[in-house]
Length: 102
Image (cartoon, rainbow, N blue to C red; front, top):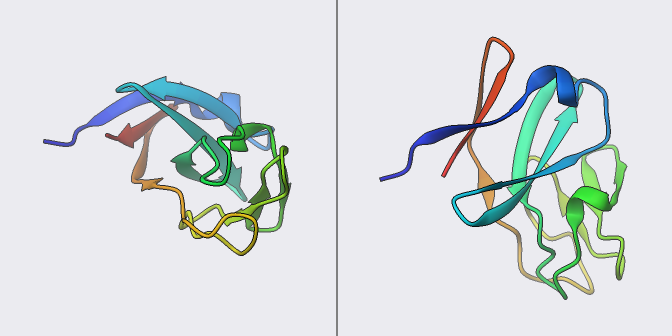
């Protein structure tokens, strides 16, 4: 049964670059978009690039390896070279704790 697990502190994310956390054997990328925290798989569905190291523009992240783009809020693939979306995780913030449901 899925449960929320603390993965980071909100102050670590405030207006900063995305970060990668490992929880439940998964690499998860955390993004702060205007104060709202989002979590998606950190592994690009094209060739496994680290999305937490990608360029963030507006509401999308670009994989640093081959330029695949994904919607940060939904994990939706936005076109070539990736056609498969990444998993999106539920996030909740409790005080300074960022928790992801895994």
